[in-house]
Length: 543
Image 1 (tube, rainbow, N blue to C red):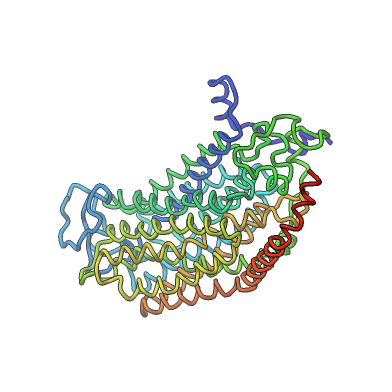
Image 2 (image 1 turned 90 degrees about the vertical axis):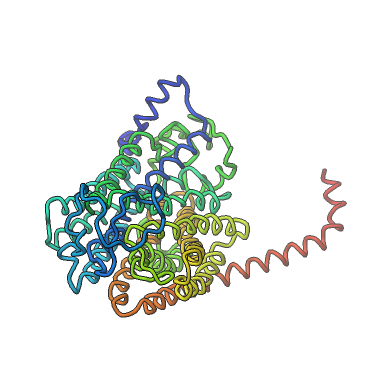
């Protein structure tokens, strides 16, 4: 069987071919890496931006009758904090039904909050189920085409959800189905982008690189909030159409410019196997010669090096040491993180700060600062785990620190706007830090684990197992919040703190292993230091 038959779809992205023809020469390996980082960053920013509108419009679909807002300019163009207003200030804008504080049927009844929770859980349940399938397919199909299909499909169904406003649809199942199908398409994103990064980067400084790169999650949440809030005055449907168009354009960008594999652009031997990638790419500036300069010289055809690797099954990937503990930890970490993602704007619009309730738009604006803290947390967690060489210790420490951070936010966040912002950002730092670390550096580490013996492709599969399990928790958190918030927000925060504690507890075994390794290395180094003077003459004689 020829190598072209083994991997028939692998080719250069058309955008890169166009740039090559214009430039007249090819890029260096480092330039390609920057290009991959930028393209995947934009791609997953678009994924998260398209998930944010539902949290922004919650208080519009199911409004508080005592709270109304009608400012036109969103933050950062207008004010960050927009107070309660009584009248519509600009009748030239289509105010729609939600302007009259009546909400949008079927979400404006007594069970409206619960229905919004059901919409969230339907999306996240399909997302988590689709994640397992998507990860398995991602290790078999061309990642560029797979990612492009997922992004364009996601955008179409996000737009269709928003069209329910213009088509005057008030049937619950329509919105439920749109979210479910969108969730399936969204599942293509994370396993694919992590696998692409794993194909191009080794383990050296992986935590820091991926911590910085993972800022796309928070940037996507922020940009999605701002996009959705900026057009909210024109009708809530636009709050879905704009982010939906963004992810469709991102899909086109991926198709044009993403080199998913080094072999696609002629770097033979760079990613012949996960283990090789981890060892050969330690130096980010290392230049790998093209077409025949790597390996043992037997098979240097780029298509051959990527085509012969077998994909790992779900059961085999689950048996990789560390996969199950981190997957279970992420279940509770994402339960906490996604509860904030989907319900923080709603919580802010229903909580008095300095005795004043803020508008829906202001709540959406303010909630973005939680993700600003998350950006810092992701980078900090990655940097600390690289320095300590201890992923589990870092993740568990952040989860435990999130407990007092959330308690302080709930207890004192209503005292003033400044205190609310500071405590929200601190909570975002500790909540999103371990979530970012586990879904990026940890997944990539385990996907290139030594137990795979270098003959398997498991990056997307391992990422899917870990993030798919986490996404089940992500579905459960918002669902429980929909019910608990009708009773008491204290109950919601209690659930979040228990979740954070459980997440840290699940890593206890791995933490003990890492601590033992640290002590054993210290003891070994002490023995070497003591034996150093005696062994020095022998070293001199050998030289």
